[in-house]
Each structure stands twice: as structure tokens, then as C-alpha cells.
Length: 265
Image 1 (cartoon, rainbow, N blue to C red):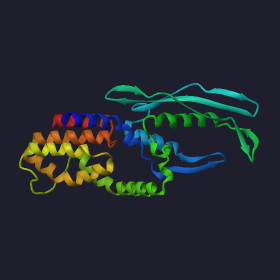
Image 2 (cartoon, one colour):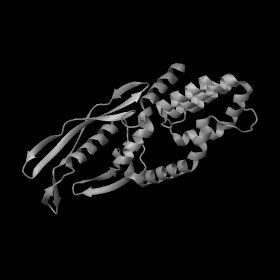
Image 3 (cartoon, one colour):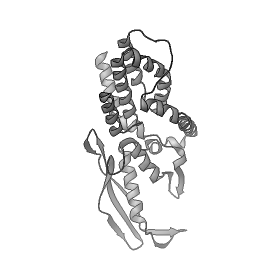
Image 4 (spheres, rainbow, N blue to C red):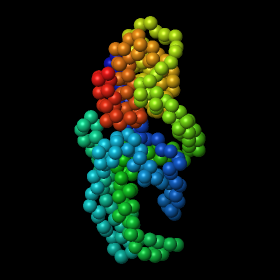
């Protein structure tokens, strides 16, 4: 049983970034239909914010290695392509995903006729390449998997994001500060058993919404543990902080700082 659980944990860890990055807020998308090509555009600035929330500031927590533009074609049929590879920092180590390519045509058209040169062609190619490179880590995968064409999925995700926005200020303050004060009858006199329950329940937390639901349920028990068994409370806080890191509610730097603060207290 233990071996099976470890195998499941390993599989979940393999998707820890993907599961945090895959969800896309429909408010930052736009449908397009360009003849043979149609789909959903993702706001490029939103993508950068999404990555920043997960890895930290651009250039410090993550970034892109951009290649040299390659131009090809002849006359009015010219295009540009460029490569990009996403890198990110994790536990002080730089990791780089495989490079991907993006591209676009160099000319503007209207009603099937060439009207001029697209001065933003290279920028568009870079944005395209960065989006595909970020997808290697799961960024906005729900769009690329076609889930945004499902009206039921769009309704569910819109409601989830709205609910999280309402809950975020209060719960984030409680959890980030470790201030889980409250009065509740002790759910378990044996704090060792409670710590095991905490570990098992956090294993089921897959996203910020799950975490907030879990936090509301456990905050009073954490408060009692802080008074009755400080050592157990510290261990439970470590489990909680690790989960927040894995689901993208804090960066690696914020996690390490919180752990160091606990050691100093």
C-alpha cells in the first residue's frame, strides 16, 4: 500500500506545474476566425502574469531563451519563424524545457490582397513561440486541448474563478500569516494521528479552490495544535506550505522564507 501511494505521489509531482498552469481564465481569451484557421487567442500579458505567479518575477524566477529570427519565402509569400525555450528556477537550480517554434507571415492582407509589410511580424512570431514554449509546462493547456470550446467547462471555470476571487483576501491572510485562531473542540486528542490526517488530506488538494476549502475546515484544529503541541503544529505548517507551493499559491522563494521564519520562531 505504501509503495502504491509513493508511486501515485511521484506521478502527481510530475504534473505539479502542469496542474497549476493549465487553467485559463476565459476573461483573458478571445475567439478568432481567420478563414481556414480558427481557435482561441490567449492574452500574452496574462500568460506572463500566470507564469510569474508560479515561478516568480520574469528574469529571476523564469524566462525565455529566444533564438534568431529566420526569414524565408519570396516576394509577397514571406514569413518569419523563431524559437523559444522556457526556463525556470526551482530550489536554486535552473531548468529548461525543450524549445518550440513560432512564426507568422511578413505581409498584411485585406480581402485576399497584400496591403503592406507587417512591422510587428517578428514580435508576433516571438509571442507565438513563447506561448508554445510555455505550453510545454502546461501553461493554458485547457485552451490547446479544446476545453474552451465546451460551454459547460467555461461556465464551471468562470464560477470557480469568481468564487476564488471572493475567498482569496481572507483565506490568504489567515494561511500566509499562520494565524488560524479559532475555538473548536479538539478533533483528535492524539496529535500524532492528527498530523497523519493532515498529510493525507493535503494529498487530495489539487488547486487553490481545494486548498481554501481545506483551510476553512482545518484552521481551528491548527489553532489548538499551536497551543497544545507546538512541535506538531510546526510539522503541520510545513505540510501546508509545501502544498501551497505545489499548487502555485506561493513561489519557491516565499516558501523558503516562510520555512526559515518558522525555524527562527
